[in-house]
Length: 379
Ligand code: NAD
Ligand code: ZN
Image (cartoon, rainbow, N blue to C red; front, side):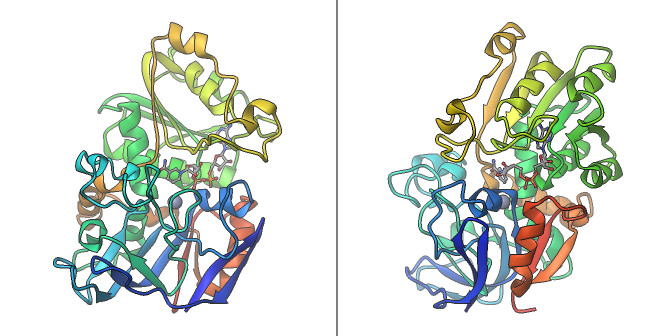
């Protein structure tokens, strides 16, 4: 089969590799029809993780089941399914609690497994023609009859829509509250979409890319261009000096200051400053325990110069982590099915698998207009 294979920093290519196949009776084999490039792929693409060369990228996958193992009951050949980027077993202590992003058995010795991901087990990714899905009965989200028609919306259930939703959940957002979202990448835009659906009174989205901010505005959010004036000042001005009830971090450890220099504390400290006293902050942007490629000593050890004094003094809360996609994807699918959510509105490019390597270059450079790429293997 054809697949997008990692060759080293900023080097990916489409290669012929052995077909993915059923390895255990609980597996399903899926013919991938849509697979997205994610901001999380870029950490690996840039060589900022321990992702091994020769492995296949792709954790945002949707397709049609073409084979099932002897132990699969619920899922049938021909079903259209969307796969959560995290792989859960369904029977460990964390999966039982709905914390499928922290499965204790799918990546033995660690908490959390995913397709085509650094430090999340050896599961291959879906930027390929075929994908092996472990524990298929548990992991597959079976899509309704409009699966093919709304494929570009449903594929966002693999990651960024649940992740954006998760950011607002971690922040504790309630109807009528205000929220500031840092990052207008796909995840930040999905957090904004989620906040609008949940009935937030004010939704601010901070970034310095005008094209991404324009999409946030189209969704009904107030764009905050961090290049123009400090983002925090702008948010305080628009909230009578109080700040927002809630804040979401949708950027991660490679966040930048106003001059475009990477500094891992920028968004967290801005969040402390622009969130009200006693407010909640949800962090879905990825931060890592080690970052050998970072510029500062602190960041190299996964630490940051965090304004803990202000945070404590304001009595705020922070919650963090990978989105437990399965906790949300069924209900978010209903929102799509009934026309109440349209996550595909952020897609900028629909491309063939062969065009993937070029798309990685553009998305990594945050080139204008490259908001979200969907690859279509077999197209
Ligand atoms: P992205 O890189 O496309 O978007 C990040 C955006 O943040 C960019 O538009 C960038 O201009 C902006 N930015 C940089 N510094 C900023 C600052 N100081 N203030 C405001 N904005 C700033 O990535 P994405 O696909 O949207 O993903 C965002 C983050 O979410 C990444 O870290 C990704 O790994 C992570 N992620 C987490 C989960 C999870 O389960 N927790 C799932 C998917 C993605
Ligand atoms: Zn992703």
